[in-house]
Length: 193
Image 1: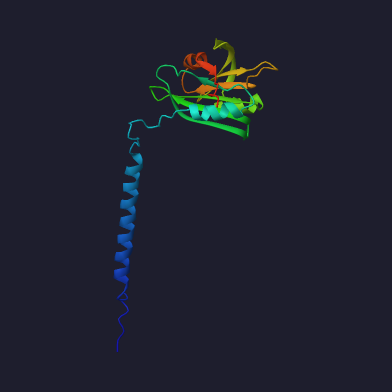
Image 2 (image 1 turned 120 degrees about the vertical axis):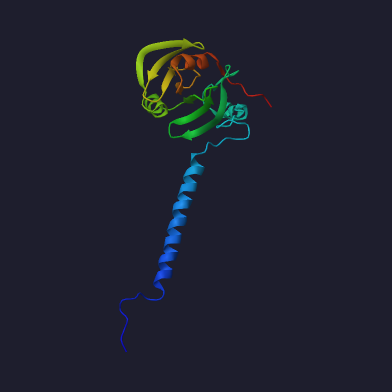
């Protein structure tokens, strides 16, 4: 009997077809996933980042913080709070942070700590550098910092002051817009009881 060495095994064509089908499905799924991820995600209110009421977190933080907690009350026109957090034992000390967005979806943050100013400011502003420029707003003297990504206003409290050793306003907005936020800062007093 002669053997037929020129033909493939009976199962080979079917394996190739299954493999091609699996590869085709992988390409289609990858394309569908890319299209899905490219779509903007919005909440039902139509804002990409939700608005939060920061007062509950501020009340808790004001009771726990070893310094006078600052908040912009009332928020200046066009600004909204997007998150608030107090960490009593964070990497940079007891830290209060309030994140904000304006009507153009530009970002700003208020942050305070009782830890060392240098590392905190560098981390928060992504290495923005101090300039010789200062601003006076909200009864405080602020040093203007500029960087590739963020601008910042930094205020360091005098020794013995009840204020946090360092208060920072930073964001993608101009120092003038940050000064507007600084002018609105007041010591937060939680309701008693």
